Length: 435
Image 1 (cartoon, rainbow, N blue to C red):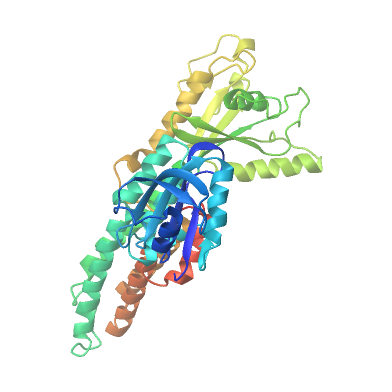
Image 2 (cartoon, helix red, strand yellow):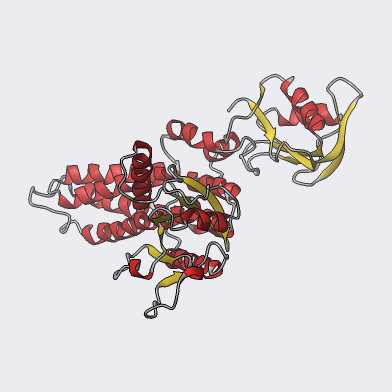
């Protein structure tokens, strides 16, 4: 980190203001060259004229903030320049900054990476910030904020502290215990079982977290010509699926995302399930069945009262379409949603049912801070869990100690406190440049 980096912290489209972030050891020299004045007061927004180096020509007159390390986002000397938002303006700054020796345009996520390397945040917090930046619904924003503020990191710290305590007890007895000693006699079994309970809960919660973070998958299922494509188009408010009386019109999977009362929902229109000899239709049906297995909610669309199943599957909502063409029902059906895609009837109730189903699936997340938000965290947490379970099965103190040490390393990698260079490069490749 001997180089100074810079990037646009705001979008590159035309706007009233753009923010250029600069971080690294050369910030003070850059500030003197650009302002032709003394360094402004720390952490105070200051109005300055900014010049081309060695010239009297002004690039822009704008606000800036000087934040010397370690009291900055990255822990390094940092400047933020609040320029006017024209592309020519910030491009001029980029050209000037690039002319300084050892000053480079930042790689993706490099500011956050430096913040972690300098102990300003942990990796869980950095990933939560990235989730917050990428959030598109209120539910996604709430979860990312919870993870950043008091989520998994506090639990990881507590588990690791307890593991180290258990390891100390084991190490202290290695020279004095015989081969019959077990975790029970070392008084660590209860502690380890409590840690395991928390870890298993976090791993279980990941499915619900992903449902909000990535969007609930809602798949339309049914026979050909029951109106799946018409329903899909009505829900997404676009004519994305071709509607035709000819069976087998939909052969590939068509998807569209919808913001449903603050929750991201991805709707999928699929091929109608039927016996067919057509190879293309067969492939469409195969894909439809595969997607149904991965779905959070299935909208099972039918068009006749006789097709209402006697038992409704746990993740299915039964949709009786074409009610405008049906006569009186033979009996009442509490768990069937009646709609007419042609007339646009019943869709408010359909969307409300989907919304309530998502709320039911994610209700525990509202009151629980014990969340893992990505596959990396899950992998390391599962590794720690396996090592603790292995330790509980062992008799040898030396092997118990090694399993606990590996579990501690798994937890440290979640926080980004060990093997930093090894894991950070891949993670921050998905971050935006100015973060």
